[in-house]
Image 1 (tube, rainbow, N blue to C red):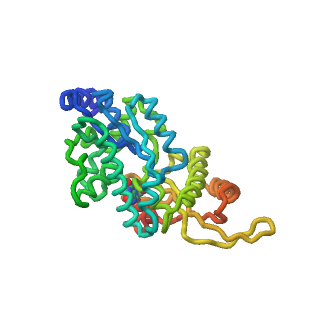
Image 2: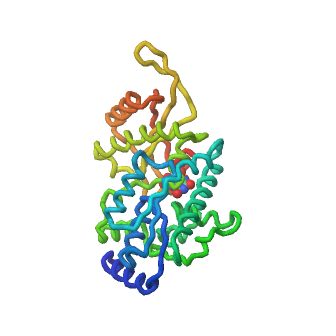
Image 3: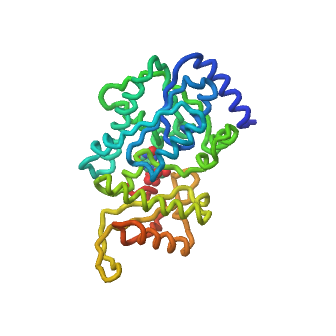
Length: 317
Ligand code: XMP
């Protein structure tokens, strides 16, 4: 029978044999898969694993600093790369969802290629690919997906010529979590909701500006913080907020306002392929809505998305 303990022991041993004294580069996302994969490789080869975590300017509020901090605490050899401006200029003027995804994918490749060139004599590309990614490449998400789906964009970036090591490619998500637990990875990392690679860019409908990102980060932090405070975070599979390209009239004191609308989204699901909108308590929604409208300048209306997948999707773009 499969056990996480045995998997960890065998995987570390076989990684040691396979990698020897070679250097490995990995992009981390702060998500469960890449974190668990990096921890395994780190336990096998220590400082020969070079991790890169990119700030694309599309992460949640304070996420870059927090995730970088926890990676450092774990002893990973991690480099944080501030590439916000590069991503914002790549996104400038784009409003089509697929065009945004492509621009983000390309910017990521450019940053990662540049960073991996700075590591002398690197031989391997580590990836957090899990079994479902292998069998259904269409649903592949995350940095590994971004890399794969850009195979055919011009010539291959140099890091694509590296040998690939994917220690989790036989595991399902729940097994990855068990392995993470065995490796003593912080439960808040292991329990994190999925977050799309393109980040807040696909939750800001239409064009991206740093100002819109800042507004959405505030709103999202209130929503997610509220879910944690009300002990609802672990009851939902994924949650987030969409900043709509719509303004509506409101009233504040004696003043008429004309500001943005945000849509809260929370779903229950097993694998994200189908999902039901989460039946969150009205009292919770009321508190969060008040908090958002009172605290975030630029937002005067909050709605809750009650669509299931299918036919709706989880994200709005
Ligand atoms: P949808 O919106 O298709 O989302 O119901 C299903 C799951 O996939 C995530 N998602 C993405 N993840 N790159 C990613 O890495 C993407 O372009 C992307 N689009 C959607 C979404 O957050 C949900 O978990």
